Length: 324
Image (cartoon, rainbow, N blue to C red):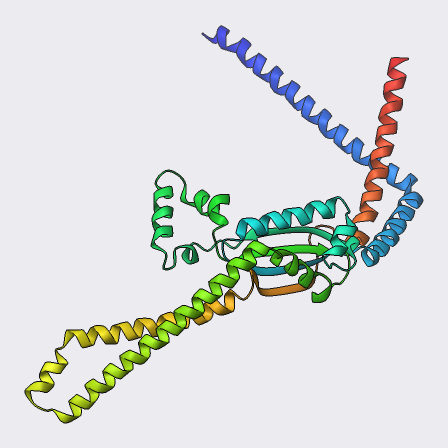
């Protein structure tokens, strides 16, 4: 029994010894690499210093010269014009990529070469999507039964039906409402078809409001007659009038009509344009990524490239000697 375990113990001691030697060798090589790196830095201290100063100077110049400003608008496409608006934004982006300054100037954009990326995204608000719209709620419920509700809410088909959308674009210099915002909005509103739809819709709303005012006036006449009868009658007749369900229905109808008039007045505000601008924020300086930080990034980038180049040259020389 003991004769069988002795060789195993010796093998384990040999394995542990070899492992210790390998670890020690790796540690020595690690220390040697650090020492060589320190020597490299010492030999090239002047060059590295110059690279740091040059990189900082170039970065400082670029930070002053190259700037990006973000601009944001919240818009409300009306009359089912959402797909049209998205198509128009895609057209603008393609013209910007093509550097078609003639087209951009024709639609009123000042300094088109300074205009950068433009895009539009929906403001996801499922509560607005189903607000007072039973058909939208039923549609969302039906679609949710066959898939992930989050994917459906954020999906392309559903998202275009949200009322509000965020339109963003960038410029390489400070801009103003007259230079970019107004020309873009005018471009989105240039559609003979949707302008005709707008005209008819506003007329329909006005007719509806006039009819509602007429009905409310008639209801007020009925209520005044009832009030006069109440003042001239007492006792059992008063109880009869209080229990008159038709009168209650008239009062409810008046309340509904007043609410509808309020909503229609709000519609007149929102429908004043095919694409209604809700708000806009301009000239937000871009600070993400390396924007404004090149004075710090370039010095270390130059030093890294110099060190990388030195190591590649050293590797090339070693491999060349081995192959000779």
